[in-house]
Amino acid sequence: MSRDEIINQLKERNMEEIIELIEDAENGNLEELELAKALGLLRDETLNDLVIKLLEENGVNIIYLEDDEE
Image (cartoon, rainbow, N blue to C red; front, side, top):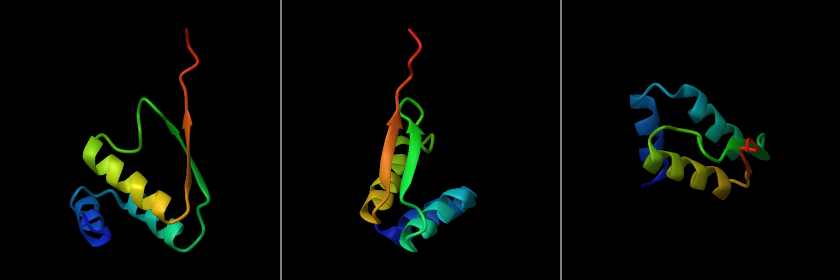
């Protein structure tokens, strides 16, 4: 899926904050993003993976936080 297709999917779902993250990454204003590994960024796993890949392609270091509860 292309960048524009991802953006269109996000717009259809009113996910403006995720679009802003992508735009920040493209403009060099986002260097790293911390995510809970169990939750990800989006509920839709496929779209989540595509957005994370797009962020990484724009130089964002994704830091996965582990759940330390035992």
